[in-house]
Image (cartoon, rainbow, N blue to C red; front, side, top):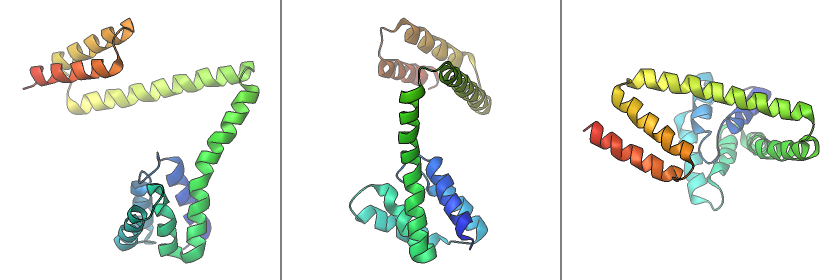
Length: 169
């Protein structure tokens, strides 16, 4: 088992998850494929993570210990700490350089990239689930209501759900 690769796998899973057990699928896929872990350490680490006090995301430290001892636990600890610390660093940099024209251009470009990725994912979802007049009608009505800024988003979602149930029974 390559220590650097293991650390990078922990780090990748930490950066690409939202916390808790969100990194489980990434670690499971990567480590099972390499033959570095079996299902048993995953189950044991998740159990330890659930019965111990504190955040559930700390199961990764137990998992690191089960597959590589103390070095594995230390690597997992550092890997799950780097993403939140990097967010703090980015926040400090943004506070310091947020008014710079290059920063505002970067943020605008990043926003456009996120919208583009969202559009691609949305098109894939619509293709996969079928697109019909009822779905377009619900989406157009929801968009129209959202653009008024008078109805809360949760109410729009609820109304869209009710319309979906009525149309697709």
